[in-house]
Length: 457
Image (cartoon, rainbow, N blue to C red; front, side, top):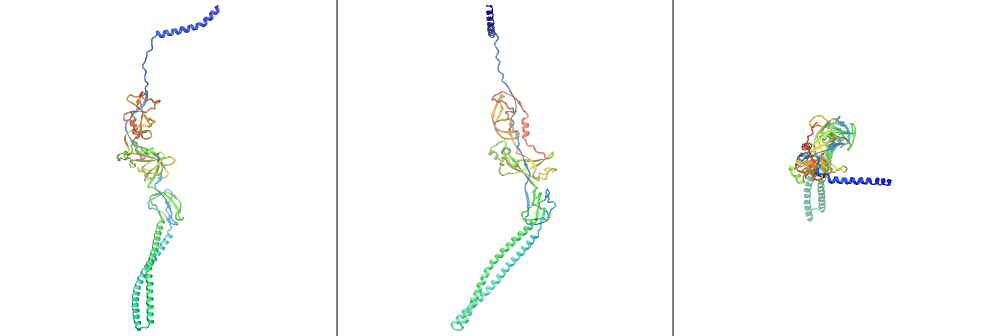
């Protein structure tokens, strides 16, 4: 019995203790103090921000290009002959002034052709004069023959009358009639010869014109024997030597103009749009003279890095190259530089020579009072704005041109509004914000978006 009782106690004791603990807990909850309700505290997110302030924007784009001469002259022989003289300077890299003699081809053959043409001209002139004189003589002879023929005809008529009265023999009348017919035939032949003389003169004149043309060609060929520089140039390559025989069409040397060079620089459509229309104005406003931003307003700087120094030149917009690059889809803008072998400030430095790789910076006309934001502040076309209660507003905006770090806002943002710079994750409309304002943002943006003149080294 004692063993069974002890087993029952071992089994029921834990249950009794559990029930007693539960009962004690319930008594404590009901008799203890109730929990105090406290209001929920809203979390504030610390963000960087700035006040939107209008700034003056000077649009600027940069690109790279390779220098090419404005004009290249391939000197081709226009007459055949031996080179009898070649300038000592006619070597790669040497300079020539406009009109300076570079080489001379033997002119003996051309001189002989000129003498022959002169003789031909004299011959045809003499022939024309002879024909004119012959015509005058023949016309005089014709006049005399006509008078004689008239007298003979009158004589024949008289003899015919006498023949009726048998005063003369019929043989005499027949002889006189034959004489008249012979004279009449001679008159016809002479008149025919006179009528042919103008055609003969015209033929000789045509031959004379051909001789004169040959003469002019020979004189032109004579001028071709002296090869002079058509413009100020620098010799690139030379392929002939003194004493060498050249033929018509043979290339002798190549020279590049030194008064101007061209630099084709590729830009995207977005870059050109940011230069021409940075604020994103409509076309009607752009047509207004006050808002017109033409290439004449652009400040173009061409720069080349040489050793430890950078050298710069003043550039000018020339034209847009035809077509679009099919590989890069870029447009080539041709920039010109005058007097590339002299520095703008007269200081020594490398020339802007053919083949140099250089940077080109184009600054447009300054546009005043534009609202700009950092590019990273845009979130899929929207800005995070802090309203008057420092709560988040997600606002879609329309943008204009974009630059390296900034984007112009056309609409959707007003001056004085607070723009959030921090990337809020997750961004929930109406969330409470704690603002850390960047007071220097406007000054920094104005400095970076304003025109900085490149100093001539």
